[in-house]
Length: 136
Image: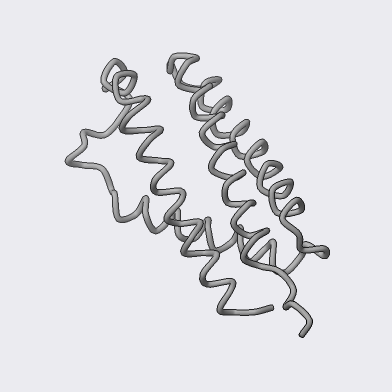
C-alpha cells in the first residue's frame, strides 16, 4: 500500500465531502432545516469541529478499507465500491432518520441522493488515486 497515495486520497475525499455537504445542507436543504428548526441545534451550538473530525475519520476508513481489501484496483472498482457504500449509508441514515424523526420526505430523499453522490465521488477518487504502480 502506497502511504502517500492513501493520504492524498483521504484528503481529497475529505475536501469533496465538505463541498458536497455545504451544497446539500446549506444550499439545497437550508429552507427545510428552517421549517424543522425545533429538531436541530441552533447554528451557534453546532459542533462544527466535531463534524469535520467525523468526516475525516470516515474518509480515512473509506480509503483505507479500499486500499486494504479491494483486490483489483481500477477506476470502475472504486466507483462501484463508493456507490455500494453510498447506497448502504444513504439508506440507513436518510430513511432510518425518516422512519424515526418527523422530517419531511424531501429531506430524506435529498440526504439519500447526496450520500450516494458523496460516496460515488469518493469511490472515483480512490479508484483514481489508489492504484498499483505503473510498470516502467
